[in-house]
Length: 414
Image (cartoon, rainbow, N blue to C red; front, side):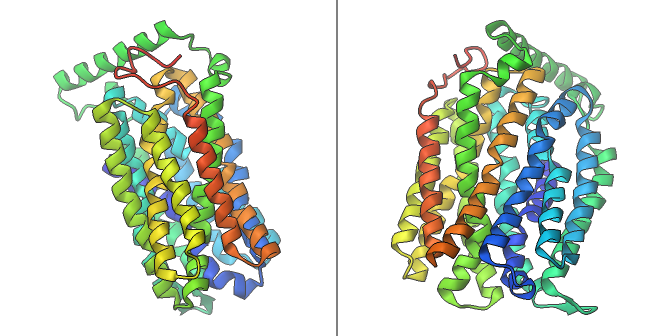
């Protein structure tokens, strides 16, 4: 888990560092808010293409090899972002970054299912997705410092992309030798612990197979899966609209230096870190998933809505962004435990890939719509209102799911 956590810190930082780079990049390259929003979001169009194949490869081939390949290629593309000169180049490099990274997050979700029992999975997921908050907590002030340099005639925002792409390549090579694909291959586990874990996971797999057909096509058109996919699309719209535009919003509100802006931007992510760990622990303790997903989504929507009302007061607006962060990150452990509560094997892998690929198109919609509304209305908070409504709609869809039960692995969702 610590190693996977570190990989996701690197991955997420390479994905969202464009939000910090834009404090200088858009001025240097003369990008409009709409150009930036489109470029930030087009990452997820590329990301969409390889999600389902990637998760199936993790299930049927090798998580270790697939994750290593992803990291090396995304690190190289992330570093090349530091050399873009035009809007077209920006669009293409962001698209290719999405293609390169596709399959990492859902692949790890599937991979965790190879190692953790259902009743322990939300806590494992919480520890993993906590990397999103950590990457922003560490990355925000670090990005602020790098933005201030001018080495070898290159602006700081260019060095931001270059320096943050290199670790992905290095750890991609390490991954090939370090990760273990399944418990059966874990020579580092005592034999009795290894045998117990294998038998527990096999018992869960057989129980779910007996309750539901496990054909991939049946899984992909399952009503619960379709609801989860749409809800995730709406929630990702809010999350990435928030991530990519938060530094710009704080800059416009406060007029502070880049270092101050990036440091203040880290505050909501500190709250998000605590939230994801708390909701993950609570979800496993109660064996409940639906409310542990819907309630954070509601909090995110309300927090964003209140930030619109407080937009003239910088401190209060930042406080409301912190409230929103409770939900923007806290929903994930419960959410990602839902698909594996009623599916297993290749069917579960394909389903996680579908939800993540289609849902992450919201990462294109959110930044782009915020940029469009900013240009047409003259206010970034019109876009924030849109993000709020998107999170509230996601919560409503989750509540349409049947309630999860205390022993989901033995009594799956129907």
